[in-house]
Length: 241
Image 1 (cartoon, one colour):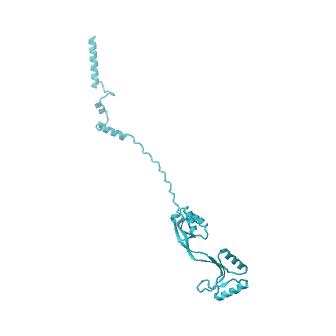
Image 2: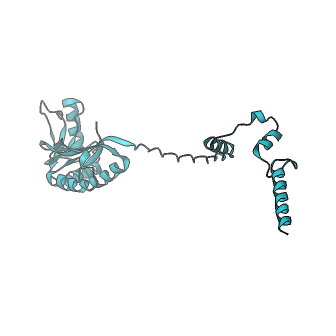
């Protein structure tokens, strides 16, 4: 029995040795590398890569991700173009009495116009009386004809102005009044009597009064300025240079 086991093991070893040496045919999946290389087409072109080369080759063979198509940038909103204001070069308000000037300045300060405000002096006539008269017409002879007409219409209160230097030389004075109302009443009475061409001339000393100029203001600011100035007697808002 032992002999049989011995010869059986010896035979099995022999078979394994012959299989390993390829004496029993080409091995399959377990074939050795030299034999596999011999079965390749053009084995002389084969090249064994180092680990670094293998990683580089794998990276280059990997499919590259497609570049994302950038979405078009939205067009910027148009910048609004500022509309130039229609500016008034210069506006002048006046003349003001001393008391009125203080009140006017205080009210205008609320409009924010003080930085563009400059105070000036405006020639002004202080009216102390009103002359009711007929203007000169035809020199001395013309004045005498008008006097005759006045007498025919019942007018007796008059005299011929004969000052050699006055522009009113040979004008006919019909009365002098302190108030405008009294002067206007005489004019109305003379017109009812048929006297035509009667005028009123304010008289008094020439003085200066306060005035104000405003530069580079727009139409709305000018209108507000005019609205304030309208509250003061004899004050006008005009353009200036």
